[in-house]
Image (cartoon, rainbow, N blue to C red; front, side, top):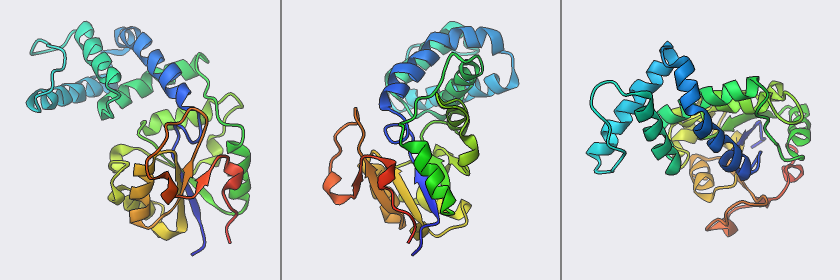
Length: 243
């Protein structure tokens, strides 16, 4: 079946893993207190705090040991303590991702942050778009964070080349149903989509949904189990033109 869309992971596929772990996460940690002081009374941040409190209660019920916080309204110090606890564990917390996205947004707009992309990414996305291939993103980072990344790269604003963004609001990246939902939202069959990621468990889920898959191997990426079960690329120039 003819390929009509490319679905891309970000971390370790489009941008180096080091950007997320060495730049973005530390930036959010360093600026969360300052950001909360400036914006804590806004409706959007209050929504994030309410969601963090719900997640905190769930973590306690699950027998985890988040930092001990007083019941009732949390102080900024308490919010920061819990946010740092989540960051330390690399939790895929929707509330954390939402708050981090707002902090990164301020950093991008102030030009403190710029996203590095692998040099082969944008020329080959343009090549595929010229061949009438749509391009979508599926990342555990929030849709806001994804849009900010592509509009504030070291080589400029490339957001006009991305057609759609998906985060874990559609489901887990290791759940095949997430990929079926994405296909439906793109109004395509899964078989018309190539999914590119650096994580084999994600590729397995995409393949179970019916998508073609490519394992992207980049410098600094973790070695993946069952990598021999997937076609491997090291550069986006290896993504074929549609037949």
